[in-house]
Structures are given as C-alpha cells and as structure tokens.
Image (tube, rainbow, N blue to C red):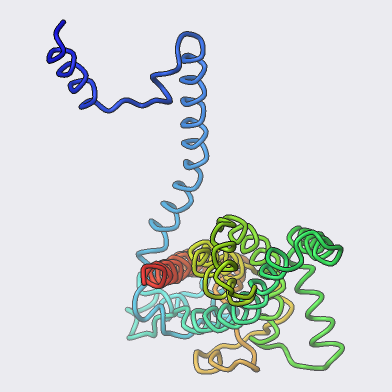
Length: 333
C-alpha cells in the first residue's frame, strides 16, 4: 500500500466520528455497559411515567376550568360550595353546566380563584424575599469563608436538620411565636414567614453546592490580580454560579408555593379578591383552596380544585421560565 492510499484510508476513517467510550470496550465489558445503559434508560422512563400521568391528569381536568373570570373572580364561601351537592338554585348560581328541576337559571356569577391567585403571589414573593438573599449569603459564608470551621460545620448540620423538618412544624412554630406570643394577626406576612423557614435550608444547601462547582482557578486568578475575597465572590464567583443559584431558588419557590400545612395555621381566610391584596391582613393561597375544595364535597368543588392545581403549576412554570431567561441573559453579558 502506497503512502497516498494509506493517507486516504486514514482520512476516510477520520471522517466517521467514533465514540471512544464504546469503541474501546470489548467483549463482556461491552455487554455489561449495554445492560447498564438499558437499565438507566428504563429507570428514567419508570420515574417519568408517574410525573407525566400527574401532569396530564391535571391538564385534562384543570385546563377546561381555567378562564379569565376564574383567575379574577371571588371564591364561593364554604357553605355555598357544600350546598352544590343538593340545592339546585345554588348549583345553578355557581355552576353554568348544572341542570336542576326548577325553571331555567338566570344570569349568574362565575366562581373563581382570584383571591387565591393574589394571595399565592404575595406570600410566595415575600417568602422568597426573606429566604433567598439570606440563604445565598449563608452559602457564601460556608463555601468562601467558613469552609470547615466549627461554626460552618454547625450551620451545615442545622441546615440538614431543617431540610427534614415537616412543614406543619414550621407552621406551628410561626403560629406560636408570631401570632400567640407577639400577638400579630393571621396574615399573608405570617404565612410567608413560615414558608421562608421551609425555603431557607433548600436555598442554603443548593447554593453552596453550586458555589463549589465554580473552578478554584477563577478564584486564584482573581486573587493573583490583587482582588480581595469579597470582590472575587461578587464579581467572579456569583456570576459563574448564577444559573445554579437560580435553579436552587426556583426549587425552593416551587415547594413554598405548594405547601398547605403552614398556611392553615398562619394565613386566616377571606372571601374577596380586594381583601387578598393586603400583606398584613388575612389572605389565602391556591394550595389552601385546593385542600378546602376537596374537603367540601359537592359537584363544583372538585372542578375548582383541579383548576386551582393547574393554575398553581402554571404559575411555578412561568416564574421558573422567567428566572432562567433573565439569569441566562445576565450571564451572557
């Protein structure tokens, strides 16, 4: 074989990309690798099936209920929702699809989840305002300053303990401290404090792990140029870890938005959308209304519960998308 032929054969082989991870595995190792790959794919599919089933069920049952009026209208009180199972007049008043034995129904108001949507946005925003900055600052101390000191190890240990504390315990704690001991009323602020306690350990641990992923060479290069630790953290480390910090924060927000137990003790109850706009007054959330509607019974309540569930998922998805988009553009700059 001439040199030209050898060169052409080599060029032909180079044109075809080869996966080194597969091409270097032979015999029994190749079979074990293939079995492990199939097992991982199967595990992923098995884990995705319940998720897809839940999301599909919520979309099928909740999407037809969600309209513009549903998102801005007041919620019927518990008595009216309970009467829907037997009272034709009340049923026709709140349910446009209902049929009764009496005369044709007149124009009737459509019930909605307006106050719950407003209350969810307010309590979640306040909880995020309390927990996310404090959690990121704690993670900065643990990873950039404290490292393996006694105080840092103690904070990590307590953070891990807080992560496993049931949410209802946080609700009781804020209820006893904020409402009973200090005498403040039940309000969106009290609920946001309970939700912030749940969010804080998630933000701390996820943020610390994201900061650990930033290469030390960036810190060393910044220090070599004469920058102090705080400036290196602010100008180098945080921008590099920003996408991960946003992901961890959104994970905490998603958990806070879907919590019910802390809200039961701290937020109270109101019946009008206008009343839900106050921070220090009684309010409600979508998760609390889902619980109330399911326990009420009747015909309308389950429909509204599915609509509230779809709305809650949509809110979390929208907030996550916006946060990721903003962080991606910030990093790109």
